[in-house]
View 1 (cartoon, rainbow, N blue to C red):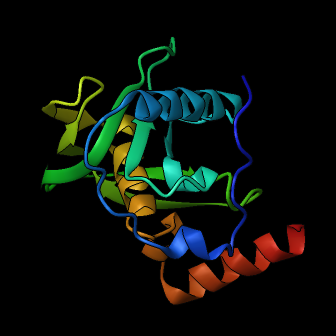
View 2: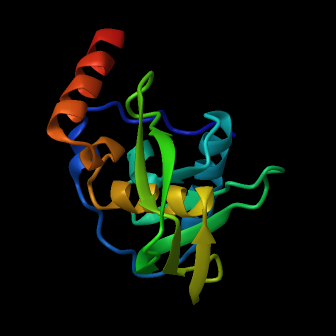
Amino acid sequence: MSHRPFLMWPDTRLRTPVAPIEAVTDETRAIWDEMIEAMDAMPGVGLAAVQLGIMQRLAVVDASDERGQAVRMANPEILHSSIEFREHEEASPNLPGVSARFKRPRAVTVRFLNQAGVWDRKDFVGLWATSVQHQIDHLNGRMYFDNLSKMKRDMLLKKAKKLR
C-alpha cells in the first residue's frame, strides 16, 4: 500500500481547521492505516490527516521505541495539560528540512473517538504528549512554527524557502 503525498507548505489546507467526524467507519480505519504507513515512512511519531490532504479530524501517534503501538484518534481534544513543560525539537514533512525547538506541556489528557468508535480518554507523557499536541495543532489549522516568536518563525520560513 502506498500513501498520498504530503501537502507542501504553504498549501491553504494546512491552515484550514477541520470539522469533527460524525462516526468511525471502515473508511476511517483505512485512512488511519494509510496515515500510519505515511508516519512510519517519514519516519515520524505522529500524523494528522490534513497533512495528507484528508480534511477529516483524524490523527495517529506512535512514539514507542518498537513501533506498532499507534494510537488512532478521531476528534481528539485536550482536556488537561500539565503545568510542567518539556522542550523538544519539532518538524513536519509539510515543510521539509527545517525544525524548531520549543516547549509544550509535558503531559496531556486527551479525549477522542477510538478505533471502535467509542469515546476514550488517555494520558500522554513526554514525546507522546508533544506529538499529540502537534497533531491537534494541525487539525486546528496551525503549524508547529506558529508557536515561535515572529522573528524565529520568519527566519525558519526563509530557510525553508531557500531549501526548496
